[in-house]
Length: 211
Image (cartoon, rainbow, N blue to C red; front, side):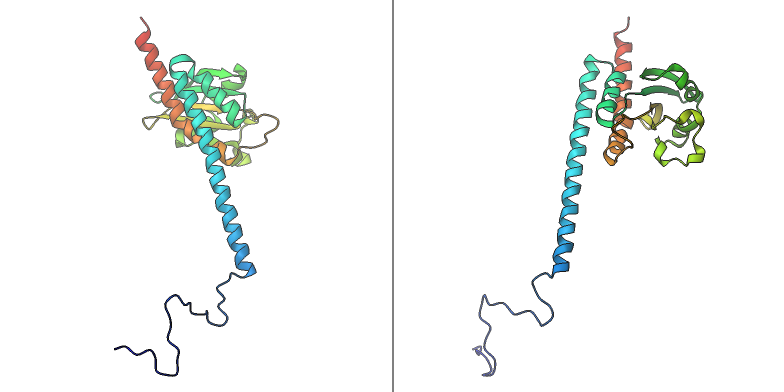
């Protein structure tokens, strides 16, 4: 039979809580509460940012899918960039892997003379295909920028089956926007692959329809 105690100490009953040791309060201190609140706000902000990004990606994806049957993929992608990124000056350059040359596929709001140096593979667009990585003006050393790139915002690679098939040259942003933001970079990363797939799909479709 188990005893109830040794006569000097009261037995612990079920449901009773042991008091915390002196100096180790179970109630968070003011600084601890502040830390938890900051952490909570940070996590909430991350969720809001991801929700915002997912909405933009869903809108871009829906636009590309719709355009496969009804519209010009270049024009649809330019609309995505205008509405979600904030630039109405866009050019799509095809890239020939075999001979390493650029050719103009489609442009919107950009003069032909402006594009000539890019068709020669100079500057950021040339580096984009050589390195296989999209290039952004904000991330370039000032000394590496060429005079004709003063209005260039980004050169985004178009990649299909791991092969670079072209570049999107994005020029000036709208007046109310002075730089690319986190969600813009993520959306452009989405376009690297899915705009390229849509372009390739529509071109193959055109070949099948052509007599």
